[in-house]
Amino acid sequence: MRLRQTETPLLAAMQHYVQEEVIPFHTPGHKQGKGMHYTLEKLMGRDTLALDLALMEELDDFHEPHGCIKDAQDLAAQLYGADHSFFVINGTTGGIYAMILAVAGPGEKIIVPRNAHRSIIGGIILSGAIPIFMQPEVDNELGLAMGVTPEMVEKAVLRHTDAKGVLIINPSYYGVATDLKKIADIVHAHNMVVLVDEAHGPHLRFSNRLPMQALDAGADICAQSTHKIIGALTQCSLVHCREGRIRVPHLKAMLQLTQSTSPNYILLASLDVARMQMALEGTRLIERSIDLANWARQEINKIPGLYCFGAEKIGSPGIFDLDPTKVTVTVKGLGLTGPDAERILRHQYKIQAELSDLYNILFLITLGDREYEVNALVTALKDMAEKYSKSYDFSLLESCINAPYPIAPQGVLSPRDALFGDTCMVPFIHSVGMICAEIVTFYPPGIPLLCPGERITQEIVDYCQLLQQGGMHVSGPEDYTLKTIKVVD
Ligand SMILES: Cc1ncc(COP(=O)(O)O)c(C=O)c1O
Image (cartoon, rainbow, N blue to C red; front, side, top):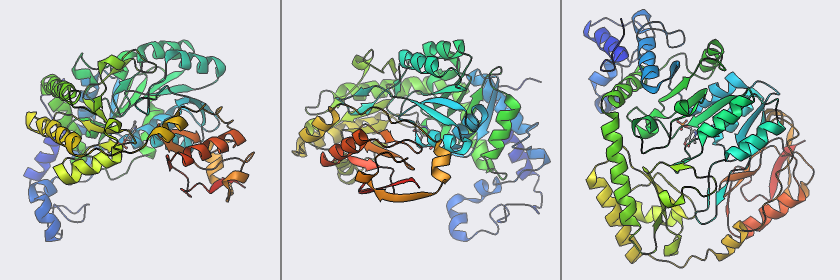
């Protein structure tokens, strides 16, 4: 019998088990809250704790699903238009690890944008694959990395015809989308797999005012953070795939490898319910978020000293489309840095942003927001702009950002070999010619200058020193002063 989107088969099975009042001689040891310290028990509530269950026949097998978990996953696949969907309780990080492991093994090439999230680099380290990096476009006004273009992808696949796949981040944290459809056509024409890090896109399917979702653009596999943008609990994600270029049994094996053998059923049930919510109300909820975000953007752009980029940026390099629910406020016009403004908003106005970078603060408008919250944000930004302006001097920094970018270093070892080989720390200025064993990234724009396995050049050392003199923030190396660097011994 075909299940309906109004149903939540996994939650229903869990509730049935609890209603039966079974005496549990199984994990978890707190036995539905009874053995738990009262501090935690009170906090979480007996009703919730009763649902903290374990794998058993009637609750299906997470790694070989054939019952209620399979039904719940099939409903997700039906909703998103996938051939198969998989629940992930290890964050999108876990999903991305599995995706990469399923496509590229040790010594095999995978093409990725250089500003890849650390989960992508992590997946590459785990698999032993060889990353071929594409340098994304950068918007110097915003100090942000944008997307990769179809032209860049075409160049990369033509140079590396033996690559197994191309991984695209779409949309970015800041809502910037690439021309994924065109990219997918190019990649498929070369018989490679299209993988998409869609951490920031589980809501795209529910409005035609949003960029196209990965599966609709032709992606073979994608990972979405259901927890980041829609209603599932933190750590919950979905991996969707199409049959053909993905070997589904192999993908399942890789999902087993990257996930617990004791999945948290409350997390799993939250995926089931979040799917049902989106099926029934997704369009209304997402349309409302878009309206709220567009209103906020319009009001923020009336505030002197602030800028919130929007549709006017579409068409500039690396911006094919935009998710308007990501509200990026550029505060440098106030002479404030993003972290300055983030702290002011948190402590003076009780408003917490998603993140800040040197020039910007990012606010997410989701199905959890109403007019009240968005009004409060706009009012706080107005007040902050009137009261707090500093005179942070960005000029040195801007001259650094505009300095010619060094030629990408040559990869000579896989990141895994570099990381797990013998390594030692050497003075950074004496590291030219050696093989780097860590990531060196400067913010803005957050694109690594060095990755594990790459040969360090004089040009890169000079450029890093220039950025440090400009006061830019370095992230990644063990020695964050970058006086020394870890290299392959
Ligand atoms: C682009 C991108 N990909 C992947 C991830 C990893 O997602 P998760 O935190 O769910 O593991 C993140 C998290 O911020 C992200 O921004």
